[in-house]
Amino acid sequence: MTSPLHALRSREVRVAFDGVEVVAGVDLDLRPGEWLGLIGPNGSGKSTFLNSLVGLVPRTGTVELGDGRSPGATDLSLMPQAPELPPGMTVVEYVLLGRTAHLGWFASESRADRVVATDVLRRLGLASFARRQVRSLSGGEAQRMVIARALVQQSPVLLLDEPTSALDVGHQVEVLELVDELRREDGLTVVAAMHDLGMAGRYADRLLLLERGRPVALGTPGQVLEPELLSRVYDHPVQVHELGGHLVVLPAPRDRHTSTVAAPLDLSARRSARDPHSEEVS
Image (cartoon, rainbow, N blue to C red; front, side, top):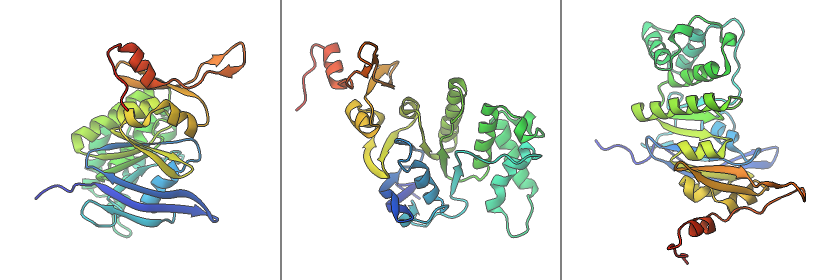
């Protein structure tokens, strides 16, 4: 039996609040095992689009799995941007909430559910925290715990809404490396709304750039992270540099004498200057 060509597909997904369209016709074809990064300014519709995929907000358009089915409760798991951490709840109790979609009415977790949760906690380095109160964890530990809750759902598609928000750079890398490792080991398809453009370009296979809810670019990081495009969409001059094989996106340097910022860097011109034998492609 051949594998489906797509893990998830959306067509003309639209979301409107009080007559204002905040997601405006997003089409996607996600390959199994792919990491797609959702990028765009604040208010561009990234979180709303993720929520629409799992049915948390009303939408129009279609969302279907590779076999043509509409996603069910166990097909997509969402890690929200600002999860609620209930007081008095332990880590293992919180993580077991991810098994809710597998339970029937009034059913409680089985031994099999606890085995799944224990295995995920172990893989994420949280086994020793199982009986700790959720509010006693550090930022990085809490982020791993929230990912654990999403993973115990055992869905083939993992949706992450700003998975490294409020984390320092060390913990950001730790969390994203963990997601990437699990993706490669388990064949997960990942869709992550990401604020840091450099981190998005470092981990995602493809990027979808949204502007006021509309898709304006979809492609590899090298195709989407273009200075002129980003400067227009983010309404601020930016520069894109290559460092260690990765793209780094920075605000244009400020001119201390004129209180202005320099124009966005022409990446193609920089590459041509670096390689005297390169030719302009018309």
